[in-house]
Every structure is written in C-alpha cells, then in structure tokens.
Image (cartoon, rainbow, N blue to C red; front, top):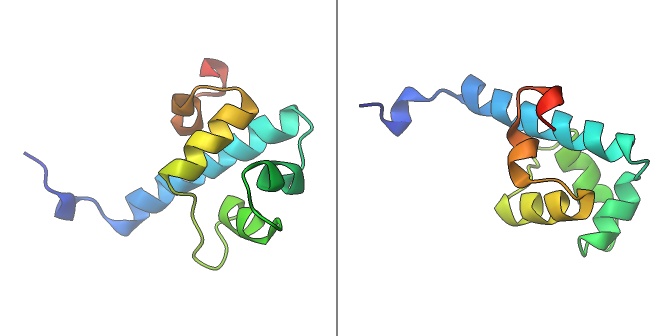
Length: 88
C-alpha cells in the first residue's frame, strides 16, 4: 500500500503543471482571456487567476476553481487532468 508520504513535491508539481497547461490550452483554443474567465468565476481582477494559471507566487487553483473553470470552458473536469490532448 502506498502512503501519502510516498508522494514527493515534484510529483505534485507535475500534476499542477499538467492541470494549468490543459486549462491554458483549452482557454486559448476558445479565444477566452484570463480576465474574462477570472471575472466569470467571481474574481474582481485577473491577478489571482493569472498567478494560478502560471503557477506564480505559490498560487494554485483549488477544487472549486477547477469545477468553475471546467464548467466555463464547457469541458469535463477530468479533461483538466488529462495527459493526452486527443482525449479532450
């Protein structure tokens, strides 16, 4: 059995990168700006969204954010975790 301690920070960072890469790719394919999606999610500015999508300043999307992003982009939330572009 694997335990939480078996997961290192690099593995977690890879998942974060995969998620934001998919979000950005899908968002750009639909010609949606960061500001547009940030405002649709209820943020007053795009600052947090921009930092989270670029993994800057230690910002990450939480589960609620991912649900809202998937809904706004009209994709299944699992698509944000996909390793394969053709699955989306």
